[in-house]
Length: 108
Length: 174
Image 1 (cartoon, rainbow over the protein chains, first blue to last red):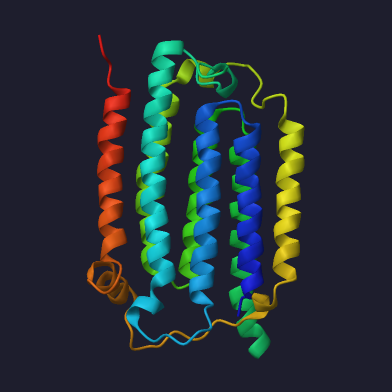
Image 2 (spheres, each protein chain N blue to C red):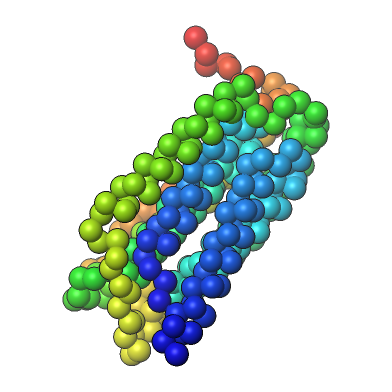
C-alpha cells in the first residue's frame, strides 16, 4: 500500500516546481505552464484525500465529493488557460512581445 | 509475500513520481518553449497515471483528453503564434529567478514540515467497495438535484463565458 504522505509530498514538490516556473520565467506562456503544473498538484492532493478518506460513506454525495471537486478544478483550469492565451495573443498583436516584464501598460 | 505485494505497488509509484517531477523541472527550465510544452505533456501524462493509481479512472481519462488533448495543443498554438519571441535568444528567466527558487524551496519545506506534523498523515486507504461503480456514482452525483448539479451547471456557465470572452479578447479589430 502506498502511504498517503507519498502522494502529498509528491504534490507539494510538483506545486513548488510550478511556483518556481510562475515566479522565474520571463515568457508569459511559460508562466501559464507553471500555473498548469500548480493546478495539477492541487488535483493530485484532492484525489489523494478522496481515496484516503476515513469517514464512513453515508451517501453517494459524500462518497464522490473529492472527485467532483477535481472535475470542477479541471473546468476552471480549461477556462483559465483559454482566456489567458487569448489575452497573450491580443497583447502580442499590439505590443509585439509576450515577455511578462515588458507588459507594463498598467504600471503606475 | 506481503512485502512483495507492497513493493509491486510502491515501485511503480516511485518511478512515475520521479519521471513526473523530472519532466516538470524540464518544463520550467527548458529554453525552447515548444520543447517546454512537450515536457509539459509528459508531466501531465504522469499525473494521469497517478490518478489511475488512486483508482480515479475517470479523472485519468479526463486528464489525458482535456489537459493533453486540449490545453497542451492550445499552448502549442499560442507558442507558434508568438514564435518570434519564443525563439529569441534572450534570457529565459527574469532577474529575480534566484529569489524565486528560494521562495519555491521554502514553500516545499514548509509544506512537508506541516504534513509531517499532521496526525492524519498515516491514514490508510480503505478498500473501495466492489459493488459500487465509481464512474456511475460520479455521473449520478454530478446531475442529481440532491448532489452537485448546481456547481456542475455553474461550471458550464463559466466555460461558456470563457469561450465567448476569449473570442472577444483575441478578435482582430481593423
